[in-house]
Length: 168
Image (cartoon, rainbow, N blue to C red):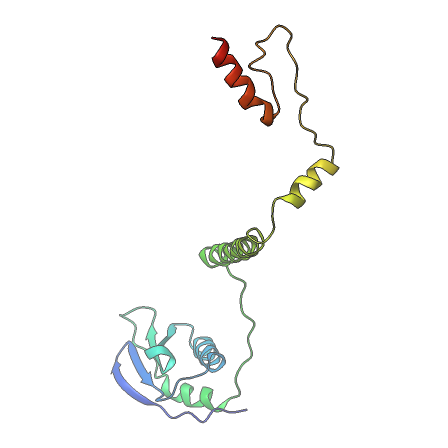
């Protein structure tokens, strides 16, 4: 597959050339052009410009003039797109990808928990705890304690309080 892109030189300096393609190059085309131009001239640095619509080709040193890249650019644009492997992420890119994946896992977990917890009552959890062996601690009866402090049925509490008020 060959690319038939036309281009125009926006400006030219002895150590720098800016080229505009008019249409946006695909990421594969852009990578291929950059790699092939840098491969043909190791003293040149090629970078995308104008959001993928152009290139800036400059020499590594401003004192060193750039060898005319236009004949090589014509040759590169007529060659098929080079399918290059993408290098694995390093440093900050790797950290950003890992933090993004961790954040996504956390947000998915919170979304599922936020959906499930208001729907589920607490009863299944208490039944599960009971089945696993949890039992409330037994109440201890202390001898010689005040009979008023002892547990009484609700129906008798009102009568006993009235009786205590009446006695005193």
